[in-house]
Every structure is written in C-alpha cells, then in structure tokens.
Length: 230
Ligand code: UTP
Image 1 (cartoon, rainbow, N blue to C red):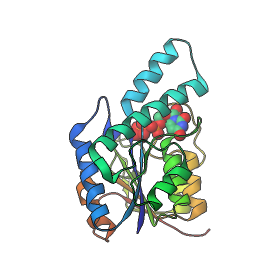
Image 2: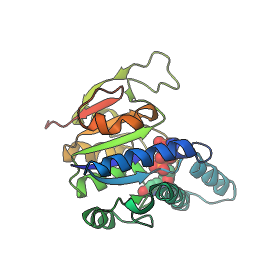
Image 3: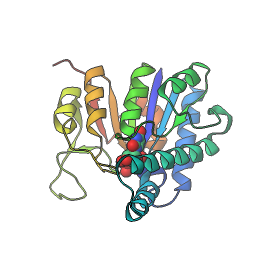
Image 4: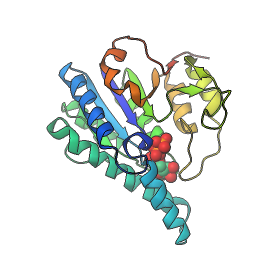
C-alpha cells in the first residue's frame, strides 16, 4: 500500500519546533515502513514560515519572494523530520515530485517541503499522491477534521465526518489564495483531489500514533474524503 502523508507546519512547528510531535510523526512512519507500507511525506512551513514571511514583508518584499521563503522553511521542517527518521528516509529533502517517486521506488521515505511559488504544501502533497498512485492521502493539521465553518472562529461549526471529493472541491476549490494563507486545504489541492478521485483523510495530531490502525480501517475522529465521479 502506498500512502502520502502531509504534516502541516502547524503540527511540526506551530511557533517553534514541536519535538515530541516530530518524534511521534517519525514513530508512526517507522511503524508503517515495518508493516511494508510505502510512505511519501510532505511537510509545511508553519509559524516559522509565517514569521519569516512577515519579517520579509516589512522589509519590502512581496509575492513570489514571500512564497520562496515559505518553501525554504517548509524544507527546513522536512530536514527536521528527516533527522528523526534516520536511515529509513532519503537523506536530504527532495525538491521535485519526480524525485519523491524515485525515492519511494528505492524503498526510501522521501520527505519534501514546497516546490513552486503560488501554492501551498497541500498541493505538493496532492501532486505527490497522484504521481505515486498513493492509495490514500493523509493530512495532519492543528484542526481535527473539516468543519462546516472555521471552528477557530465559529463556535457553531460542526465537524463533517464524510465528504465526497466533489463536495470537497465545491467547498474549497474556489477560495482566493495569497502567500501564507491559512485554510485546511488550498483550492488547487482540493481540485486535484477531485480530479484524481483520491481517497483522503483529514486528521488531528491526536490521531498520529493511531495512523497504522486507521489505515487498516479503524475508526477515527477526522474527516474521510470519499472518491466519486460527478
Ligand atoms: P505551507 O503549505 O507550509 O503552509 O505553506 P502550512 O504552514 O503547512 O500551513 P498550515 O498552517 O500547516 O496549514 C506556507 C507558505 O509557503 C509558500 C506559500 O506562500 C504558503 O502560503 N509555498 C509553500 C509556496 O509558495 N509553494 C509551495 O509549494 C509551498
């Protein structure tokens, strides 16, 4: 079984590196490898990326250059996770989707951050999942699933347990983007998931240790995206 996992920067380094969550992520990946899963990993930039992007903005830069800072920091987080994974991982963060697929075919775990300006690591994860023909794409973030509204702002927001790929694209596929934006999934990734009819899971960090059993079908408290054609 092939699985792509995207760890949001909000998980690995919300303000600064979260060492215990990085360890837990590495532990879950090692368990999956020992159970013969093929694993590809994408890491986000998190609070560190936003701090550097904020500073660079004050210093006068904008647009693509801000994106490039976000990409650099997401790669720094990739390197941090590689430090915890040791030799099951490709030793350096890979920088292209093709290199990620080559690494997984060599039985290594590729860990990568961003690739091109103008998107987020959600899109990278969707592209990696598609290119590697992953059976499932898993997103871990600081929100434990997809809600009817942003649960950090709306106390009446309710979690959605199951959604189709079409419903995901309808809900998130047309949101306006900007460097450092914060939504549970970016619009391009939502559209890619729909177009590729990809199974996806949106899980909170509390479920990280249970990932191996969740992939085998155990219940979880996140949101499952079910592939359908329109
Ligand atoms: P991230 O995708 O790292 O966000 O992109 P994040 O920190 O994980 O998000 P959450 O908080 O965990 O959900 C950070 C920024 O880096 C740039 C974009 O500006 C993006 O908003 N970026 C990232 C790119 O331009 N291209 C990429 O491929 C990835």
